[in-house]
Length: 298
Image (cartoon, rainbow, N blue to C red; front, side, top):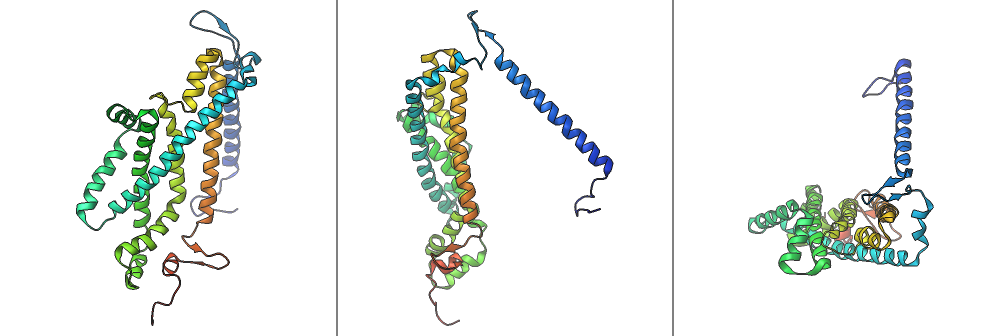
């Protein structure tokens, strides 16, 4: 009988008990799914006293044949991606600036940047949207982009700072030893490695940013949630609310799963923290930064 370093291999009684628990758990899950489907399929009485058919009745899904619906879907998706794309670019720029400020050698730069960063990290995104909208009057789109960019930029700044701090000390010392200034060492050796190492986490944060665009619903920006579950739900009627909700959920899942797949691909290709030259072997970033040239006698 094989054994593990962490625990002993289960015996016959333990395996039998595990099988029984697995079967019971599976039955309970199936029962829960069946109960949810039964509730959704049952007719329900609205507050006005009218009776609506169950969710799976074909009369509640016929709007998917309407071209006007898909025009609204395209508009909602475009508005969401437009806000998320601009906010993501802004967040990366702000994150880079925050990471440089947080790792500065001068306390006069490092301490104020730390205070500002922690303030933005602790402020809810929705409250920041409302603050920008009410104080600066930027409009719903501008408030959403600025709030998402600043908040996620603060988080990305901390991610990059952690990436720089995780690098071996020899990377910085090697850059200084070959004649690079501290700023050149940070820009050409430390930051590229930290960014490459933390890129999957940054993309994961950008997925959060994409989902947080739904908060712009509150400030009346016509992103997917507001366009489908408010504008079109009022246009077609409340009986179509669940199909529209299901459609918006499917769209968000499709976009987020695509970004998650991209993050996994990037994580595999950037594993190890090395830079790859076309047609040549991978080399450490310190060699890449210096062009692989001979730096003098050794």
